[in-house]
Image (cartoon, rainbow, N blue to C red; front, side, top):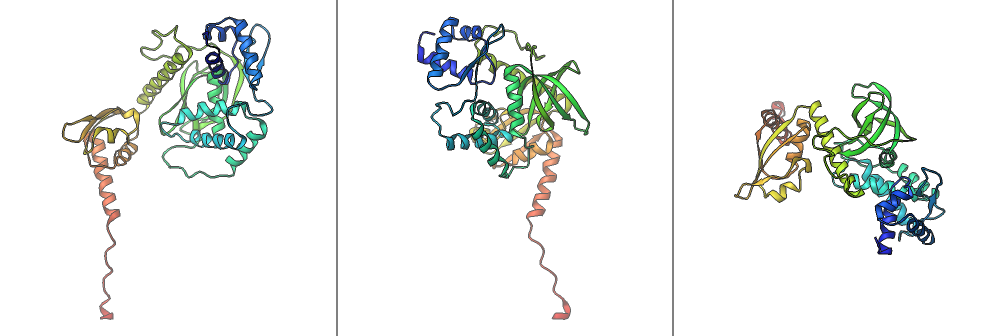
Length: 351
């Protein structure tokens, strides 16, 4: 990469991920010599970016928190406002912004000076979010700890509470965080069980990175890892995220019966698709102004029924039978709830 400004931006982007980068790996990523990497690191330091170097066979470069915010074109108030907003978005599984919030929050909090980090925590602790009620809230610090360990390939230890209330201690090799739009899950290799596991993040407590590095294991997903070995870092990251999502989907299907949806909507496909969860897939136009959705999911019956109703248009469920039956009961209850109370009977003695 001969374009120096573009190379510096790419180097800065790599260093902003929460891990230590060996000089040789950076040189390979940017297709330059280790000497050029050293010169570029010096240029970033001259610009105010606090890049720390460690020596030795496993040494490398890491972007660390400095005495002041590095020149990101943000003042203190803007940095605090962005961090608080990202924490709010990351703490709730909000479809479409959740994973981006965690990635951005991990990068920002890595370089926040301690005085600003304290202000962010104080403001976060002094506010009470009004949540939607259909997904568990999570401490953003838990998410950033898990995300940083997964990115830096560091083993994690945490306390875990299973669905029946059993509490255990786990040590894992984190692979990826996955959001379903309702909840966060951690896909990881459980060292104690010697097998892959998925963990609900709202049941994770006291997570901390042990500092022990590990070589990533191949995730047991059908068709995963067949190619892409020479792809760039971003391509590998996207592929790994896709593999983790597939693995989680398979795991959830084993735990819950799959619903095969067949639903007609009295609205254009674009209107309906924008109001349905992405994992439902895209509805197909019926040629008459409506559309039809045929999809499989492992979500709860109650949640699926509510999401269909929230599309805010006429719809008709053709299947599965249990969904049709549930919607009939839900519709009857809503109809009764909407009726005005009957007028009280007149007292005959008050003529």
